[in-house]
Length: 483
Ligand SMILES: [Cu+2]
Image 1: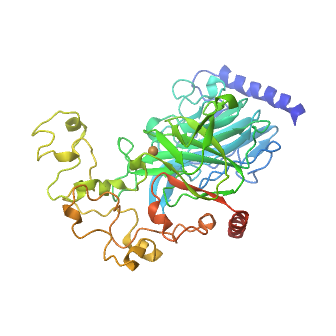
Image 2: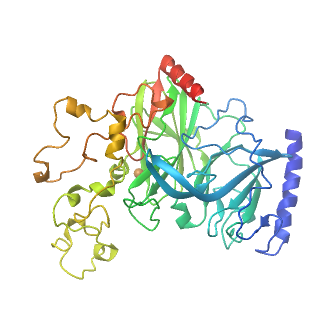
């Protein structure tokens, strides 16, 4: 392998020079435009393809729960990937499917996993109805490959293709994303893991990757409002609690979790019951002398944070964003008293929120406590609200969960005088017979969780399950059966 790497590099330089020698923005061999017709990938057949293996000794593959890996083919010494930018249907929760844009049928897009030193070619096909461009976030690669539309390349037109090719000398947690901001907000990002040649010390037994995203989707809509500044769907790897697949760990394992964030908010990611060290950023590995212990890592927009810990303590440990509004699903229907008090207005816009009043004062009857919040449809008292996180039918289908309250002698989940209590509702979340959907989100990774658990998992919330060997083996066996 090493002997032939020199040849890959030479080949790459020729390819890059070929692009450079073309006129700026002119079609070149690496930029094929084919009008509006969609065509199957020619340069990168999707099968047969490699999907794992070929990592350095002692390095474990990254698991990205609920997100597929992107397979590749070899062309000489070059790993060839094909990413198709396209509209996708993404199911955040059972029965809650939204129209996003992503890659290869998934938003976020599939995870790319390579080794430090690899030469990679990534064929990007644009099956969107508008221009796009792919940026390799944090990559130290030639500027012609940077994916900055109008600067380093002409954007890729609908039906077009751009072939990126570069050699990767870095290692760490990186990502790819569309460089069109509104496309970023409708899902267009994916993890790009570069493994080091030698495993980091101490080496880990489990390595996970999580992408944080947020969407503003009005009730009875399926398309995110990418201009909104408020968000009601918060996702981990394109799923929202309780649909996020738990991370399964054997007690005693050393665990790494890589978290990246692309959205309009920063997310303090908190791990219960364990102290971790932040061992890496979007720039790569942090020297051990600079590791900082903690249990909450603030993952800013466009940042990556790697955390590592020894999973000493058995238990189902929550991992979640600690922004309270980020632990909710479809919260616009349940913004406190706004949904409850007859005659209260809601959904006042930015202008009023900034104090530009056309009538009345901020706390006047016209504006009310909703001023500037812009919650819009679903939070007004004049409209029927039909946007709970899960339909009653689905909850009934699940057949248990928070209904255990009834078994304990409660007639309803809320007190009879609830409407007269200032501040109500807060954690009622969804009224009606239960919101636990254990059976709908059941999978090997949820084996053995307490009945009704799913009723308390919302938004950016998942679990690291540190399991004794028997339970760990049982879940692995269930996973193998499912395959
Ligand atoms: Cu958050």
